[in-house]
Length: 71
Image (tube, rainbow, N blue to C red):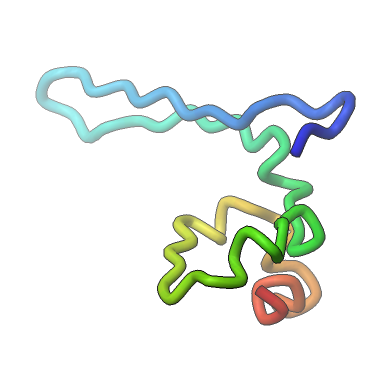
């Protein structure tokens, strides 16, 4: 699904020698992703679904995780 005016999320990982990694993250459209963005028919025959990193998707954890619970 494409939302006009939304940009793709990305993360850049910097891993210099002798220090811990640094993550530069831009949430882009992940910040506005909700359950309504899913095509339920594509999931109708799915037995297992892995949904990674919901805490990087702000709309899923706001309102006490209402969207994540719906998912």
